[in-house]
Image (cartoon, rainbow, N blue to C red; front, side, top):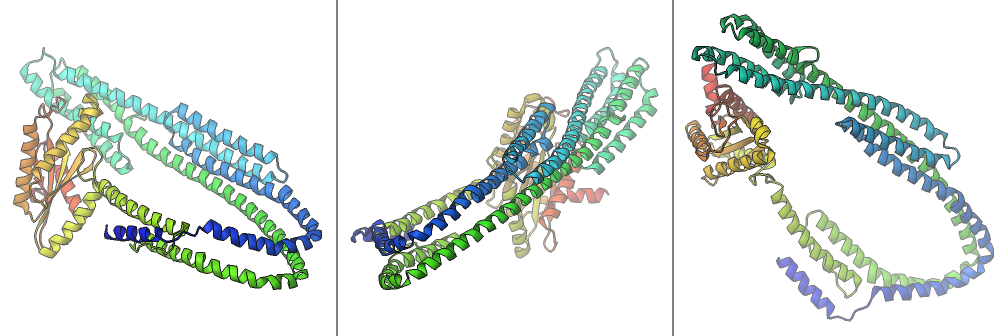
Length: 563
């Protein structure tokens, strides 16, 4: 602020001086130069006919070719961008639109090429690109159809789940039968959850592991089905068989998801290859443009040589006027060039992070530019500070985001190492949030996340406590100078606060309101744990809390002691 005030004072002082406009300075200088060389132009006029012929050649031949190359380059850049539509198309109409756009752009390039001679090489490369785009389109179409089939199977899975609920809640069943069916329904629900979750997985190994687990559950269901009521056995066997068909058959969810991931990889590879072909095509055009530019430079140099020959003929006249030119140059050097160099140096310092004032003496356009740069530099600096603050907040919940979490956790780990105190990390996840979103809608889901975030912030009572959104329905709580006992206490407070908030969740199998699960990890003094390792420990503990029934907090040491 002081620097800005000082610059404003200096600028006001400059305004009080007599103003000498640069336009007047340059006008006077150029008029003088024009008067000096007008005679030279008249003397050399007889030789300028040849020079005009050279310019005609450049204007009629070389420049149109350069313009043509630039136009084709622009179309190629656009083609590279719109070809992404083939790779990322999520439906057949979108794929057809992307294909139409690509072919339309290729036709435009061909149309341009047909207007010029010697462009056969363009058609050859365009044909190669069209061939690869056709193959990419075929792969993308196959992927879309496979994704559609996967979606159909997923809907069938949800329908099957509803049938299980209806079967196990039949009012005609006895209490003993219902109790027996509850175990069977739990196993079916676990298998359905694994199959449903597989649709969102992106690692083949994880999908295969889920598939093996589902196979084990189905085998166990088949082996234990004789223990259940005879009246329900046929329906139960039909449901298990139908689930086996939906999840594990050749067109089941697990095989389809594995094949879809593989096919997506091929589509991505094909898209990258098309980009490479287009890039090679662009480089070829750039090479042609370089050759044209080199030709233009050669012609210009020849013209310059011929002009130099004419100048030599009138050299004596130029020498007599040289003194006046030197005076003009000296004046411009001191009045304009040096001040511009100074202004450029200060602007470069500004760009490199130094806060030097851009004060330039004088009262003309250059000093005006310097004052304007000072003003905008101060404005940009303030905007940069504001933007940096906004970039560390989550747009939905208003609490710190993942980026702010990474920075804070790294800082707290260093501080804990230096101060030799424990550091605890709580990984918080909203239980059964996907059913909440599916049934209440994403708007209600967002409102629920905001409420959870507010609860976390209310629990963060110490100045060093830090709550952040980790992603999706996951949050993280950093507790500096907090041991295992303190971390458990804070986790218990979180659990009770969420329960007491009584946020409605009728689709929570355990209760009728929203609950959370908490995983705890503690870094003790002297332990070398980085941020990623500490987060993994907390994540393992969170996973254990979910496996243990949710709505609870588990410390990582509990897992170790149980093992």
